[in-house]
Length: 176
View (cartoon, rainbow, N blue to C red):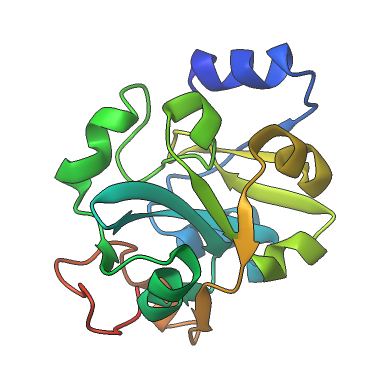
């Protein structure tokens, strides 16, 4: 279920949204399959530590975060994927791995891949592995004011099924 804090946040800001119940889906590509939608419609939140500051980096489901691009765009020395233990406390009402892209609500800056700005609507996790949320891109942009730039490297469909978080990749240029 979508946490009440997220629903209240959206209602308080008068942002219309749709809720979609689905079979349990842990990875972004499992969510694509569960909802039977094209992968470009689903946005996933990846938590990145940029010079130890956590960021929510929002990218299309079938892609991976390019950490070199994150470092360059944010102007930081280091960027790596955060371990779940490093960010779970920021999202106390959410299932781990189902973090929403609402940085204003959870006190984190948000960066979004520019490719998502061409979507009229965004579909993403909102704290649950069994329910997704859809809203207009313009409403999301007005609500969060994300930094929009290029942050991705495309993945093949099989690679997109891998878990979103890894143990290393700090400054290696490896993609997340």
